Image 1: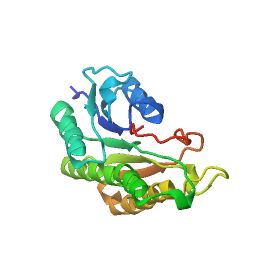
Image 2 (image 1 turned 90 degrees about the horizontal axis):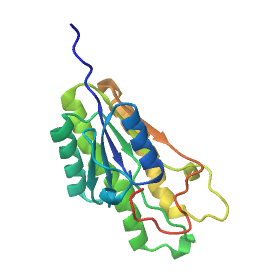
Image 3 (image 1 turned 120 degrees about the vertical axis):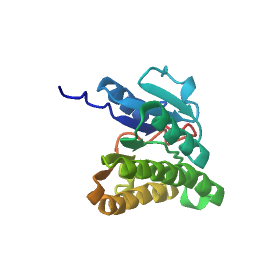
Image 4 (image 1 turned 30 degrees about the vertical axis):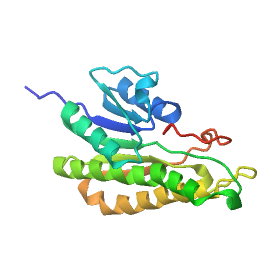
Length: 198
């Protein structure tokens, strides 16, 4: 008699709307367990179920990442994949960006990535079953668009692409895959600042 296949557990950040919400729904439809996060995910369209847990919080804070990882492990017993979708974006001329702007962008787009990805990789290594980390970046890293001034946000998105390539090499032998997806058509409300981790 064969043992039932264990359902895999995915973490999705920036899950309250847009790409993150779509990814979350796709995972649920295909039978995965999901831990979904955004600043106010409990106020979103999602309702918790036996396969979906919602965790509010700013992914740019280490305590939020720790809560997400702990919830995945305590509720479902594993972390098998992460979709790093959380991010903020706002457009300004380069000379108008401030260091406060850069710090806000870095907190969510870079620090948040490091916090949750380190915890996930540590768990995957302990499980010895491999895993997958997917990062949502931006096509504007390689293909800037005239009229959309996004030089400083693209520092963070370009950084994600760089670390994705490095980590793919570092953890290939452990069966942990790293990939970056750079959407061209989703420039998250580029005319206004988005602070919803979506």
